[in-house]
Image (cartoon, rainbow, N blue to C red; front, side, top):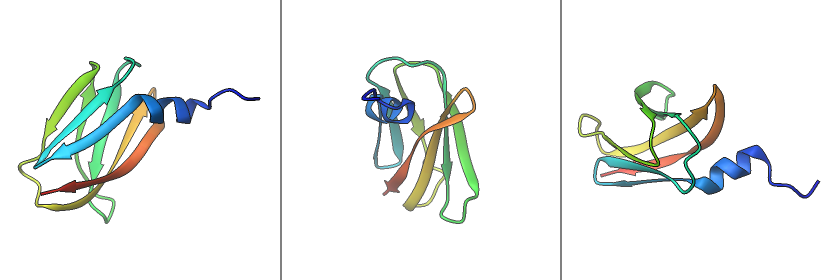
Length: 87
């Protein structure tokens, strides 16, 4: 099969970046409701949010500067993971 896997489809259609302590989540093509969760490096959940539009943001002023992990789920399946650097 030469088709794009479901995971690759989500990865290419969802962009996550941070500026200061705000995380921006953009869907190039609106996929549907997503659950965005941020973790510390020990795996503890710090915050989560339902993303229900093609562009959303999450204020993380309550979280210390540092490196964090995130995952995004759609219909209970993990569709994207990554690292965030909060300043």
